[in-house]
Amino acid sequence: MDGNATVDAQDPRSLRHLDLRVNRIPFYVQGVQAALTALALQKMHHPLDRIEIRVEGNDEPVHSTILVAYTQTVSSMAAIYSRLLLEFLGLKVGGRPSALLPVEKRRRGDIGIENYQREDGTPFAKVAASIVEDFPDAQRVREAWIITCDFAGQRLAHPTDDLKVEDIDVTPMLLRTFETLPELVTRVFLDEAVAPWGQVDAGTSRS
Image 1 (cartoon, rainbow, N blue to C red):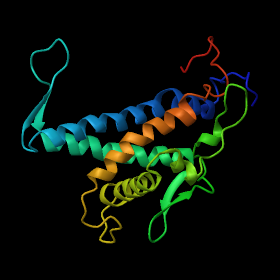
Image 2: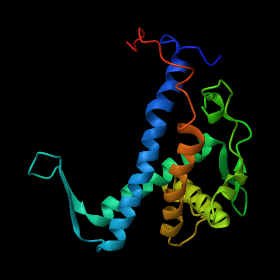
Image 3: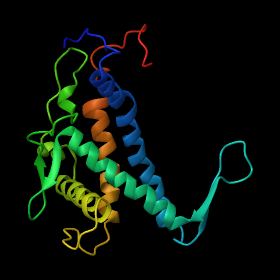
Image 4: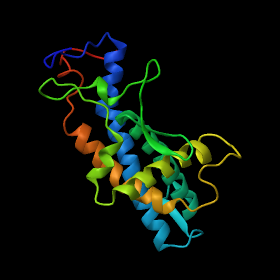
């Protein structure tokens, strides 16, 4: 489609692309950023300290639990979101030992950065693994992304005794991923991508 096309409200694929660009990718990025706060709390307080979640304007907490239950839940979800975001950009982890690899071919129905375009109509390309060189500590960023993806895929996504991560504290690696990935997604995609493709026709609806 050209850069001036509008989203067809009757085309489910167009709407999925729009939803991913406008809602879901920003949501995943915010989820990763939220994990930075969770990890900061984890560092400052005892894991068994009580934590309460309150809704503004209400005195009573809507949820109460121990700190570690909150921080591990938030950071675990952020690890899964990180793996999703990297794959969206065109990167995956595979091999033995694990390495940062390009997504060569997507599965049918998958949506990636290459399905979107910039304001001038030029399409995005998948991000290369060399993108880590954009960061001062490139090798550590690469290792962090790899460990985060292995953690999301093995400790969280399914039970297995074939652990690539093994019995190590992945927190420092998660922290580095959560610090670098939101900036990357924002810089290479969110700041440049138009709502696919062009603008939504004001007269359309999703009913």
